[in-house]
Length: 339
View 1 (tube, rainbow, N blue to C red):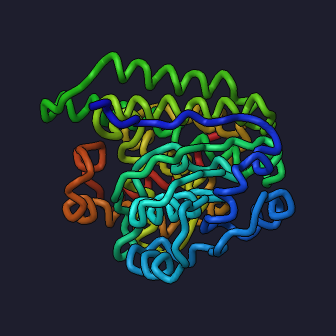
View 2: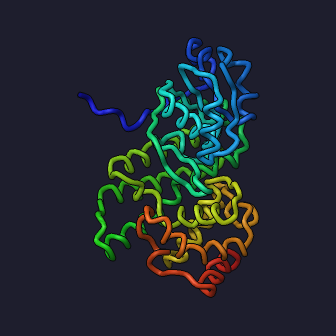
View 3: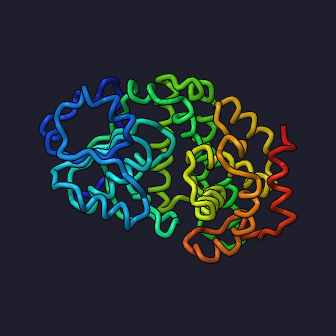
């Protein structure tokens, strides 16, 4: 028996929407964000059985919404991370064929097989769904606000702090560490740095680079067996903040902000990181991301108990060094003090 594939490679091009098989388009449920659907509906080669905008990614609510949709042979996700994760969830639960068409590249969700939902406001990954096709339509992506695509570097920038955590866990706990995979992940970070101008411009080359880096990052995580090569304490802080405030943020920008704070906690230089984010044109100061200084401090103070509850999160700097009011205030202050 052949092993099932761990990834589907993207199909790149322009006006790919019009090339969708009409038989699939006519017997599908479309899960989407409203804006991209309005952009492509005249070119869509069929009339979906239903068009639905995910109202929440809280697991009970999204599953109830999906259960209300008519049966279909296929499900298409058109939009950002929520639309793609909702489509993956529906395909996993129903057995329908799956097509994904990201309209922005703010998160790596379209490239992963795991399905991100929320349970009581906390991130959980469930299920396993790979699309038959992953369409990267440059016409569609370039019609989005550049900020929404540039933010995609968050899940690549996180390599910087995730690898530090991984080495820490190996040294302190004897956790398995793969130097070859770590080096390959670091090389992806360096490719992102080298392509910063193209990413900022959201040129076809820059958008393609983001996708290629996502594909490679996901492949490394699949190869190692978990997300150590890409995810660490910066994501834990982001998850804790989301749980604390109940707010929705642009994922990549929030991760960029949390990378700065986490790198500072790791005693890594953050001046080069801030310069890189400025070159990339990625918002990363609290006001631009939609976070107050008080919320950041509260999230940092909440982290020790949060990590005791979220035992599935591997060891990182916030496990290792703990947190108190003085340290939290000092970390947040560095965002104002660092040029």
